Amino acid sequence: MLAAVLLLLSACADMSSQAPAGLNRRRMPKPYLRDDDDAVVKTDRNGNGPPPLSFNSDGTFQISIFEDLHFGENAWDQWGPQQDINSVKVINAVLDHETPDLVVLNGDLITGENTFLENSTSYIDQIAAPLAARGLTWASTYGNHDHNFNISGAGILARETTQWPANSRTRSMVAGRDAGVSNYYLPVYAAHCRGRRNCTPELVLWFFDSRGGFYAGERREDGKQVGQPDWVDGSVVDWFLTTSSEMRREHGKTVPSLAFVHIPTNASLALQTERGRHSVDEHGQPGIDDDFPLAQQAQGWCADGSNGRECAYGGQDVPFMQAIADTPGLIGLFSGHDHGNTWCYRWDRLVPGMTVAGHGVNLCFGQHSGYGGYGNWIRGARQVRVSVDSLRSHVPEAETWIRTEAGSVVGAVSLNATYGADYYPSTPNDKTYCPTCNYTAAASVSRRR
Image (cartoon, rainbow, N blue to C red; front, side, top):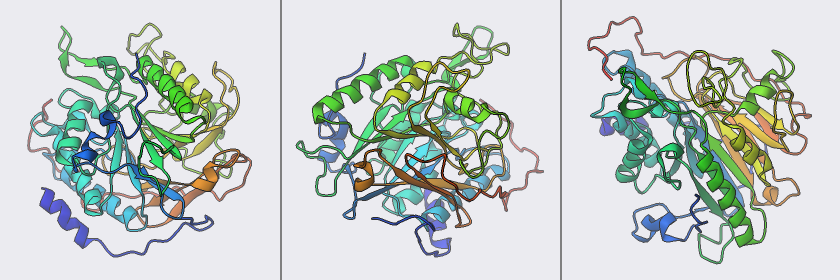
């Protein structure tokens, strides 16, 4: 399978890489651990893992975010493997135009409920192969579909780090069943400083596991699977607050940051619905807004921690929202999950119905990247670019845009102090369909969990 995936790389057309039009191209919690500590980068010293992240010599750093790839659907039908083949083509099409310094896989890498126990995590190899062939490294968050009866975040992490140790930067820094798996941070250093003890990061990347789905291999007495809460756990929030505080004390300043989590918080829903159906303005917050209302963390859970049809929203993501809102220097929180949403919104106030006020952090969706999962919105990947100069401004800034599988750029904006008041072109609501998938074919093998 791996050889077949690699062959796809040579079959892709050679397309030029250009900067987007309108954007300037300028190249109890554990104690705080520096990037040069053994617990964080021990593979580096063995020569197996990637070196610490750093800015380019021109002072820029770019991230490509692929999300909701949903590999592994219906392997027994013709269309299941064909979806995966076309998802690999999306990855290659985007990367033929973009040259990121890091790839983020922002949740729902695999549709776990469709996988077999024996090979559920092997789908990671199909995602990893085109990235590794280009010499890229990646960092993952895990989504609700990555947690299911035959698959777990821990299993995916093991696959990443054992099969792709030179390329995977995914870590797990918070222990405990309730924490989930993909909770960690990655520092990014200046070009001249690559993780030495005397260096202060120019940027910190935070990754959170919003969990959801089901606990692997567990059933209740009635035979039903055991649901896993779908919000960032309080133990992770405590770790984040402690670690970021110690980081500020260690370096004597606030280090600007970006954060990634699969399921968006209730703040995104409140902003989306504040003024009715068109609260997200097509020129102020350009992007697709088809998933209305969106599905937020703690959806389907009651305040007492039970889940069922009578539960709408339990509010368990409030501590995480408070931590995100109060973190100085945090430019944006990037989510997936809602395939039909691709906008960014500046959260800078107390939105009606909320108990937490935002102070300027941008809440962004990416682009549905895979041919698995629901919806036929054009596939692609959000790009985020920062520069040392923009991070050192009074209000740290980032440039972001979406590169589609067709090679076009949509939704290009600057996440700055005036975002939301600035005028941008609207995003076309284009659709694409799997060109080689026969969805009328009957299943030849029965589905099993």
